[in-house]
Figure (cartoon, rainbow, N blue to C red):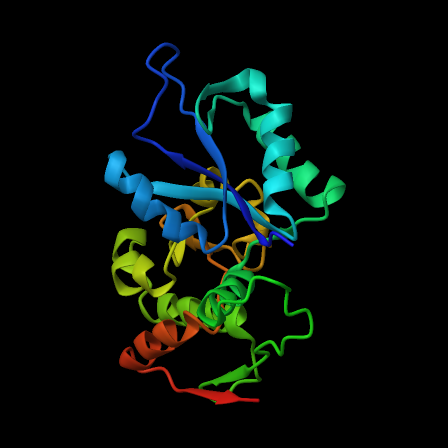
Length: 243
């Protein structure tokens, strides 16, 4: 098998000089998508961001299929000038037609382990995942994402007049690793094709700050939750991990 990830990334600094539209790069990696940013960054300015990514047993076959469908929209190499509707179609093909597994933090961790072990021959389908729960200030147990949401909400309750910018300084993007811990829903709509899977967007989870509707990132795994917990403890929260 040729296990790897098919990704769609973009860079707001890169535009088609003829149409002035922002293209998207459709490629594959047998490691982490973020590892590809380094090589791209050596050649191009700006910041690369992942729109979405999917894990496949045969990533080369998936790449050939997707790039073949949109070959008429290719402007250079693996860069394609495609619309939002076409991006949604790619996502549907990956999920429904080819059975791809959306790359989340848990999938990234699995890929990382395969890289370390040097084993690309099989997916660890029976791999033991981390289902740890956490006690926040003696409240009922929560999973990783709900813990982050509860801490952010509690902090806002204690600081009624805080602004979004101040909140982002308290909970910086570096805690999560690839996206904002807290931001507007519009931010996640731009960054993600399916934002409702990347943030807590239900009405009772949305936070109102100074007439802005703020949401909290839901993408937390064993690779980054410790960063957030350490920061939360610095802010005075009591958090205890339970199995």
